[in-house]
Length: 419
Length: 205
Image (cartoon, rainbow over all chains, first blue to last red; front, side):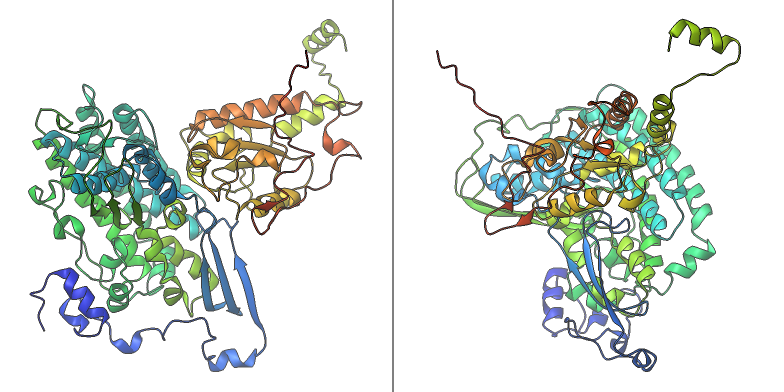
C-alpha cells in the first residue's frame, strides 16, 4: 500500500497494524526480527553467558543525582554484570505543576511559564503556545513578526543542537572541550536574544498576534554576523569530532531505534529522522512562513547514536540556510497585529492544538476555552518525555556506559519531561 | 598583629600571617562545588564554568559529582517535594566545612512556581543557606558575585571563640533531618533549627 494518505492517518493505521511500515520509511527498513522483544518489566531470558553468573543480577538506581542524567532523572536499571537487562525511567523529580498553574492564570500570564519548559529553547516554546492561542482565537500575525519568529526559532535550533552535541560528547568522556566550544557559540546567540528580548534564557518574546517588540536598530546585522561566522564553528567542530575514532566506536550501532518502533512510539524530531522517517513539521504542517523557505530534511539510515548526532549537525547547516533566506527577505512593518488584544483577552469557547517542530521534536499545546480569561484545560505535548519512553528498548543489552550515551542522544530537558 | 609592622616586614621580604588567615585563604580559594543541577539555573551554572565567565578564576571550577568531595552545594533550580529529601541527604553526605548557595528565585522561595502543590517554598526551610542569589535565572555574573560573597564570608570566619563556624563547634548538628513525604506534605514541613516562619509581633499598647 502506497501512502497517498496524509502522514497522520498513516501513523494511526500503522500502530493498528493495517499498513506495512515499508510504505512510510524513506531509507531501507529494518527487518522486524531485529526489533527488541515486547516491552514490559519482567526479566528478559538470559543469554548463555549470563546464566553462568546466575543470581548476580544487580539493581541500581541511577539518579536522581547523577552527572550523566542531564538533570534530576532516575533510571532504575537491572544489571547482569555490566549489561542492562531492564531499565525503568522514573520521572517527576522536577514536576512543577506547569499545567495546573496555567489553568488558573490568564492566557498571557502563562507565556513566561512556557519559557521554563524546555529552558534551552524558550523561543520555540513561546511560539508553540502562541500558535495554539492564535488558532483558538483566530488571530493573524503580521509578516515581519512571522519572519522574526522564524529567525529566533532557527537560532534556537542552532543553540540547542550545538549544546546537545557538547553534552553528548561530555557523556562519552571528552571532559568539556566540545562543550566549551558549544557554549562559546551559545553565548553569541544568547547575546542576540538579550539584545532582542532583554533576557538571556527566559525570553518571553512572543505575543498572541505577533512579537512583543521589534528588533532594535542593527540587530539584524548582528544576526547576519553570527550566522556568517557559524559555519566556521561547525567545520571546526566537525573536524574535531565527526571522524574521531572514539566517537565512532562509542556511537555506531549503539542504541538502534528501528523506524517502525519509532513511529509506533510516536517519537518525533531528530530522533525519528535519524531512524529514516521523513517527518518534519516544518514541511508537513508548513506553519509560519516555512513553505517560503528552501531547505532539506536530513535523514539517517541506521537510527543509532551516530545518526542522531549526524542528523543534528546537518540540521544546523539547514537552519543556517533558512536564516540566510529569512534575513534576506524580512520586510518592514508592524510586529504586532493591531487588532490583537493583550488585556482582558477572552477567546470564544472551543479547543485548539498548536504544534511546531521544536529542536527536540513535536511540541504541542492543547487548549480548551470555556470563554473565560483562563483556559479550561491546558496540556503540553512534550517531545522530550515521549522520546524518552522508548529508552528501555534502546538500552537493553548494552552496557551501562552505553546507556548513558543513548540517554544523551535522546536530548531531554527535565523541565519539559516533568513540566 | 600590627599592620604597620606587617607592611614593614613585607618590604623586607618577610611574609607574616596567622594560622586563621592561612587556613581561611586556603579554604576560600579552592571551593569545590557539587556537580548538581536541578533545573534552568543549572544551565547558567554550567555557563559560569565555561570559557566566557570562567569560574576557575575563583578556584571553584572543580565540579565534583560526589558529595564526599564537595565543599559547596549550589542549589540551582526548583526543589520539588519529591526531590527535597534527596537534596538534604546529599547535603548530609558532604564533609564539613560545607556551604550552600541558593541560586535563583525557585531555590529561595519557590519563585514563579510557588503556587504549585509540588514545589518546596525555599530550600532554606531545610538547609542553612549562606548566600541567596535572586533572579530567574540569575546571570552567571550573579553566581560569580555570590561566590565572591561566600569567599568573604569564609575569610571572616574565626577559628576559635563563640563566633566560630558550625564545623568547629561540638554542639552544631552533624546532619540535618531528611524530610519524608507524608500523607499530605513533607514531614517535617521545615527544620525548626534552621528556619522559623515569620512571627507576627503585635504591639500590646
